[in-house]
Structure formats: structure tokens, C-alpha cells
Image 1 (spheres, rainbow, N blue to C red):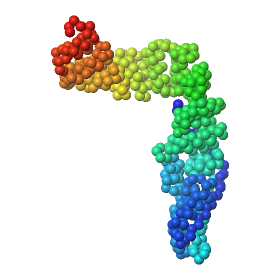
Image 2 (cartoon, rainbow, N blue to C red):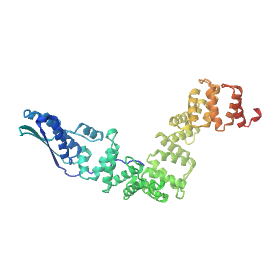
Image 3 (spheres, one colour):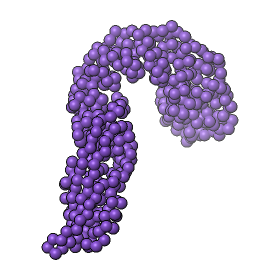
Image 4 (tube, rainbow, N blue to C red):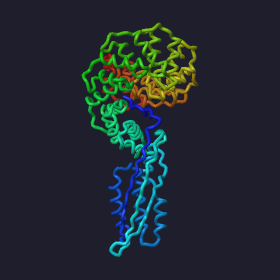
Length: 478
């Protein structure tokens, strides 16, 4: 299931010009202690303001009150306060980390000094007016926050998406889920879809597949493509709802008809093997072709396989090679290997062993066991590449560790005898002979019996020799 992206904003959301005012009072003689008290009072007074606006105003109040130490120097203190009247550092970094502009704000400030009980008292008033929001694509974070606080579901969705996708300390998936839910409850379908995905996977919220299915279903009608696909997937796998493959097919078909490649692939899969629905390989090939033409590498690989085998379509090696190549160029390792094999044998393309070795290497470097063996074989036999036994054994080892029998045998034999630029290593050869023997390779069993009997590269061990000779049916030699 894939988390969906940011939707479109309307070009305008109307004029929004609320004014927020806060008052902080400080007994001048008490200095910073009283300023902290005033700061707390200002925070309470500004609960209705957006976070960045609130942070800037509170910081301005606190700064000015701390600077005021006597009735003299009032103007200087006011100037210093005004100079610091902007978003607090962390909130400014938060805005930047989430992709918002965070231009400093200017506030109207008024500072007065009164005398109460023979002590000077500083009174600072800070006021700010929110500008009209015209283009939300360039809105600052506090403008978004104001829209969110006002219940604008598109703003809730937009801010939730930014919170979900932000990096590091700026990410807040729990709040994103809360905002998606608020927008979803107002009928915002993309938020319904995203909330459903979070509930499905338990991402920052308690996992609840039944509730996830409910939100997905709401988002799917009228259609949100991703929601249609997710509803199909949940019916297909019985996640959050009773499994029903016929309904899964219906929902996959709706999303596939609108061009969603993931739905086209899953629809093709169900039809190809008759997964809960009648098998239809021709229709399956059609849907794989639709996804392949959109550039989906998995669909390109499967379509190539079907073309190669004549499954649901006319067999055509040339077209198979073309689709393998397209998928391979996008990094699909099985497609890389298969295109290499077609190049090696000249099926659908001109025979080219060097080209084959190039693609074997690409797939081998991605960990494909068969490609690792094939590359090792090409290096051993100088097929399209310069002969390099040491490099060949390196790849045989990699494939052998994944259980490739022929690679284990090849590594064992080359290490036993030594060849070209590879020095013999009978101790390691024994290890590979044993791995292959444990998979039932009779020649390796016989070799082990002989090596243990003679102490060839290892200490003589009659018991181990007898064990392997009996396994291969040579008990009469024990």
C-alpha cells in the first residue's frame, strides 16, 4: 500500500484578517522573574492565535519586559523588542523543515510605564493582523495553521501531508493522523484514503484494519484511485474485511480502467492464475501490457515472460527481448538476467556474449544467485569477458552461499586444483564439496570419501570417509 501525495489547492481561500492582541505586564523592579510571569500570561492570552504568530508575539513581550529595568531607556527597550519580534527559533526551523516560508513578522508594539504603589510597571501591548491569504501554494506556516484552526479541511489535509512527509525532527505522524481524521470526518476523500492507510499499517496510530477498511471504502466511492486499489487489496487478502476475491476483482477493475498500474498488475495476476476468478490468460496479458506501457518494470518483466512462452499472447522472442530490456534498464534483476540469456543464445536479439556478461553482472550485483553463477561461468570460460579464475570463484562463492549447487561444485573443484590466477586451497575446497554433497551431489560425496581416506588436504578420517562412500553407494570400498 502506497501513501498518497499532496492534492491540489484552490487558487484562493478568501480574505482572512483576524487581529490578535496580547498584553504583558511586568513590575520593572522585579526584573526577569516578573517577565517570566508576564510571559506565561501572554501565552494564555494568545491561545487562539496560530503557533508561529503566537511564538513571535510572546517572544516580543518577554524580550521587552526583560530589557525594561527602569523608567528611563523605554524607547531603546521598545526598539530592541521590535527587533526580536519574529517567529521563535525552533518554530522557524520547524516551518523551514516542513517546506513553508517563514518570513519574520512585524507587530504593532506599544510600551507604557505606569507607577503603581511607588514602583514603575512596564506594560507592553503587541498586536498583529493576519494578512489576506490569496495563494495557498506560497502560504506561510502560521497562515496554514490559521486555516487549520478554522476548520478548513483542505488546509488540514495539506498540513497533515507535510507533517507526514517531513524529515527528522520536523516529522509528526501522530498529528498528521489527527489532521487527516478531522478532514476525513468532513468528507475529504484523500484524507479518508490516507487515514485508512495509516490505520491499516499501524503507522503512528493503533492498527485497526476494520476501521481502515471503512475509511478506504468511503474514499473509494466516488473514486479516489488509490482508495479503490486499497479496497481491492483488502478484499483480496481478507485484511479488515472478509476475503472476497470476486469483489477484489471488481475494485481492481475500476482502478485499472482509470489507469492505475498497480491495479492493472494485480488484476493481471488474478486472471493469469485463476486466483478466485476464472482463468483468462489473454485478458491477463492485456492488463500487464497496459501497465507495461506506463513504464512499470514489473509488468514489463511479466509481459516479456508471457511473450517468451506464448502465454495468452502469440510467442514472439523479439518482443519478449524488447520488454525484458525495458524492464532491465529500470533495474529489474530477473529481467536483466533473462535479457542476458537471450543475448547469450541470440534469441530475439543478435547473439552477443559480451552483452550477456554485462547483464549477468548487473543482476549478480543485485544478489541474484543464478546470475552470480552465470557470471562466474563466463569468467571461467572467457565467454564475452577476459578469463579470470579468481574473479570467477568470487562469484561462485556468492552463489554457493545462497545454495546454488553448481556454483558450490565449481568453487570446490577450482579451489581443489588451483588454476590460472587462483591458488589451490584444499581446506576451503572441502567446505564446498561438503555443501554440495549435503545437497545430494554424488561426485562430491565420492571426492569427500577419497580425500578423508587419504588425508588429502585434511587430516585422515576413516569414519568420515566411510560415511560419504556409503552415502554414494560405495560401501564395498570401506
